[in-house]
Amino acid sequence: MSPQEQCLTSALTLESESKLTELAAPSEKLTALVKYSAGRIPRRAAMDALCISDYGELLQALNAVGLPHPILNKAARKSMVKTMLTMVEGVSGSDG
Image (cartoon, rainbow, N blue to C red; front, side, top):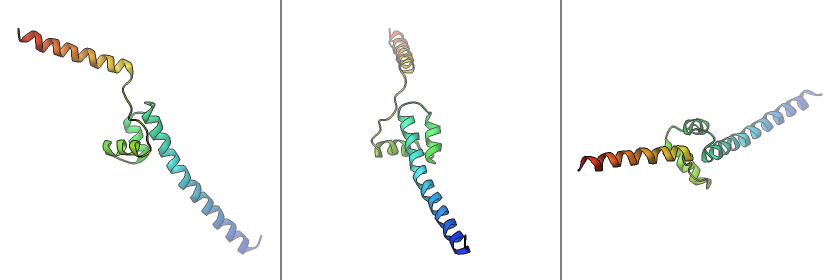
């Protein structure tokens, strides 16, 4: 292979690798958003994958691609309801 062909091949390889990197980065970010939206990764992992430090930016990113905000699993929600009811009963019981 001539020096010119080697140079061209190297340039094309670098350009291809650059394009692959550009394509991979948004895909990885979208994957992180999808996983976070589905509750499969924690907030911090999603924010790290997106290189952001503000939770509001994470919510904006979800909105931008039309993904729902995650919700707590059923067990966590039940626990929160139980705690709230205990607190309300404690407050209403002290009035009396």
